[in-house]
Image (cartoon, rainbow, N blue to C red; front, side, top):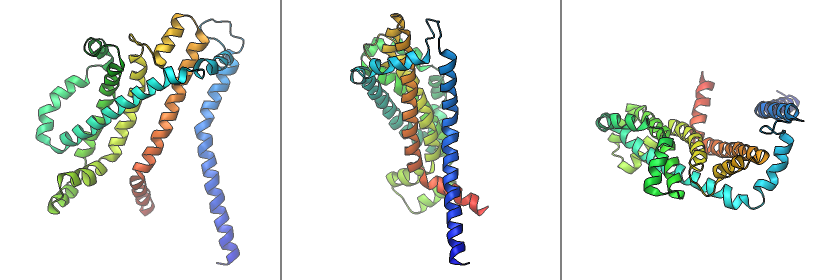
Length: 276
């Protein structure tokens, strides 16, 4: 192959790669753009008090949330969300690895786990208020309880699915419990652990809002309820938009974490597809 043909081939590959990235970006943003444009024009000129035009909601967004509310309302919600989510992750992964590695312990605890899992976390809010009050601790615990179950159950299933040959190899090489946990259990179960963590993040966001609607003094959920009670409809809808934006930002951050932590897994799948 001549040098000219090599250059032409390289350009074609580069152009095809760029085109693929452009198509991927368009596929991601196309639907949100269509929905926003549809909402904008369909609500324009609306006289319904409870469903104001999107233009009014967007106009109310900046003065509502960027004039001190970031520090007093948004950041407290985010810190409680991250705190509860972190607690759920540590307990869920640690306990899930233990239960997934021990069939006897798993069979012993399964009835209790199924009973506790069936209780909606929102039902626990009045009970937790009695013991923890209405402060940040109660909300962190509610978020942790709700986000725990997806992480815990996915970790258990991920650890159970680890190849027995790998377990036997770890025993033959006499790996210490810590090395076995970090190199075999944690890495082998990481695809399902990350799946559970993604599900737990969605649950944590929901519970963050719900917990702030019960006898709260700050937070995004508290502010939305305050606007609803005072019939400030554009401001209330702007809070709902803020929650959507927060969910998108957290999802993008999680996707970045997923691409880094599971880089080996995605590479393995791609090599397997290439081999076939």
